[in-house]
Length: 176
Image (cartoon, rainbow, N blue to C red; front, top):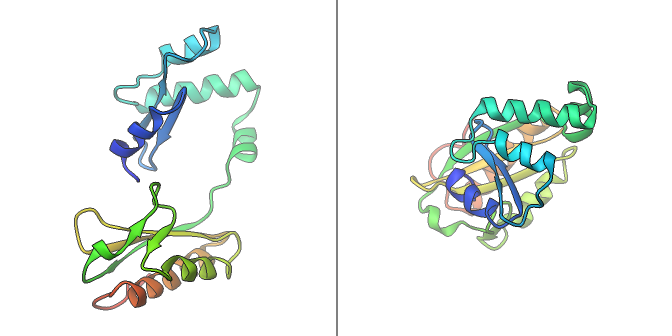
């Protein structure tokens, strides 16, 4: 599941639980099982688990870069590659027909929805796509990413078509 309310509960299951949303909300949580080391004590003092504010997050990043003797370029090259992404939503008659796994990365129902999404992902370079029903309105949210902007758009468009066909879509397909 997405959203801080779900991420926080999932992070509590780990000795060190880290969660962040794209909008910057999130934090780092430490359980009582974490060893009492100087570095981990410094991290615990730096992080504000109640609010997860951006300034303490920035200081944490600075600390970790210095600890690893990395530059910002090292961090970008060694840890993460940001791909172009596209988000769409498709209006449906009844969002409750869409069922997802616990972390909403796989569609469990309708039966052939995930199989069709997997096939669409295989047609673009490093494509990833998942869908989930909205929690408040009869729409299905689509998240797609790929190596290039055009492929991310292509994947999102194809996923929207699949959702519209498979999940009782209503109205026109979304346009990019």
